[in-house]
Amino acid sequence: MSHQQPSSIAPRKHAYSASSVKQLTLKHQGEVLAQRYQRYFQASIACDEHDLRNIFQLRHRVYCEEFQFEPSNALQLEQDQYDSYSHFCRVQHLNSGLDAGCLRLVNPNSQQSLPLLDACSSAITNQRLHPNNFAKEEICEVSRVALDGLFRRRRDDQQHGARPSGAGLDRFSDKELRTFPYISISLYLAASVIAEQNGIKHAYVMVEPKLARSLSLFGIKMTRIGPDIDYHGIRAAYHITIERFQSYLPLLYQPLFELIKQNIHTSMGLLPHPELSLDNGVALKSL
Image (cartoon, rainbow, N blue to C red; front, side, top):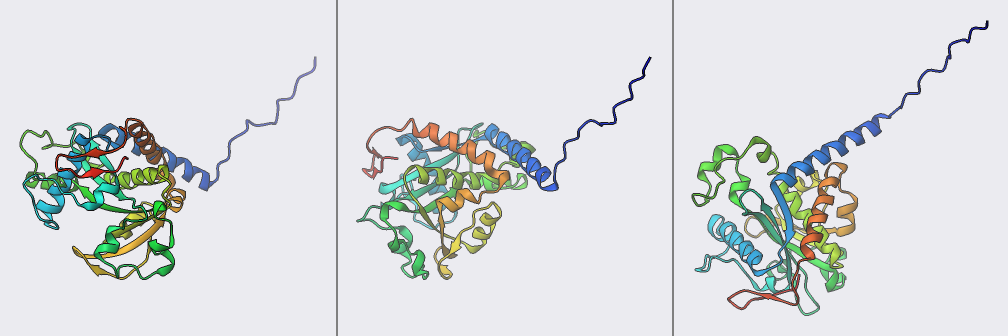
């Protein structure tokens, strides 16, 4: 009776490089981040007059009342002439229904201009990346970025927030607070989706150099195209292509980007036809 020799072949083990393990870890962390964000916030494009009014009210609270960059008005709506040819996105706090943040993409035609060119004609010194070198329909300026003060404050500062009583925002969980830093990045992610859908290739923004450095940590690598300008504080002009923005997005934020893209596409499908208008007669571009 013969005895079969035990096999010398050991079970095959999967070998992962350190790089692969890091990528898997980042992917998992990104999925957790997106799930946590989805629990508390939702990004969308403004799709009716109610959304637009909320955005203009938020801008009034931030730009007129808090920072006093612009004069207050009785309507408590912060608006200007560039709104008539802009796309608008917002991030809503789901538990309260309030807008936590918003921004606009000013998308001019051949007869219109960008705010930074009108307000600071000397802001751009890099002639190669000057907006005049590109077709108007392919450029935009990201501006009027506004975050509600409550969503910029730590737990210790909430008693000083300018929110009406009964808003239900006097307490946040620790998990909820940890999502607050991603409100800004989600607005810029939403802006890139809106830009891509509208054939926009080049984006300009006037921001504090400190903010530009902070955004670079999120993978938003903008090119500085001008000197410091004293405009509501020290700011500088920056340029980025939509392709570069999306191509260089870190793996950690890609699940969040896919979530934002889904949210934006869903809200874009709800858009009404031709133009929206507010009571004061400002016509707004079909988004």
